[in-house]
Image 1 (cartoon, one colour):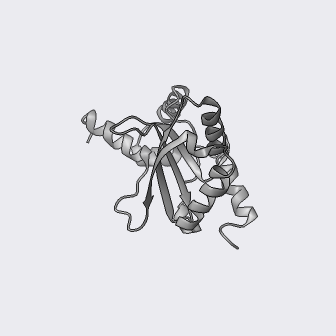
Image 2 (image 1 turned 60 degrees about the vertical axis):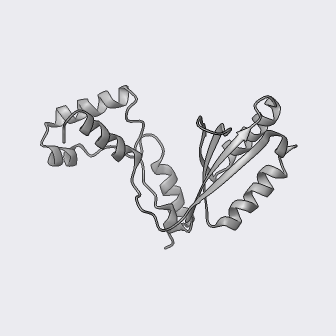
Length: 175
């Protein structure tokens, strides 16, 4: 059995689908000592409010060989609308890209692109083959680019969900 064979990958993908996983209210009851009805109504309320947007696996992508996380800060020339749209279309379809955001700050960068790869060489190969060669006048739309490679050692690895819960608990003096 391999962790990245077709069966395991299909199961992982299915776990991301709505309704394939759900909260275990009995386990939550054991941890919190709240009544089952309180737990169920709270979960329903948080889903209705859009706070809980789904359930699914947390995958350690570095254990699958993807040990390089890249953050690109880009200065896109938004006056070239057609080229920007082409760049965004390519980035949105790129499976290496897991987040693409507008950014503000010091300097001229206006987009941040978060990606993961096996190594630096595969990052550069993907950049050349899927962006530079496929987007006409790539360097007319991407005016500047800074790339940061996050590698081992990792000093902290946590989830955004855990972080926001801890921040809110402290803010509300619950801890």
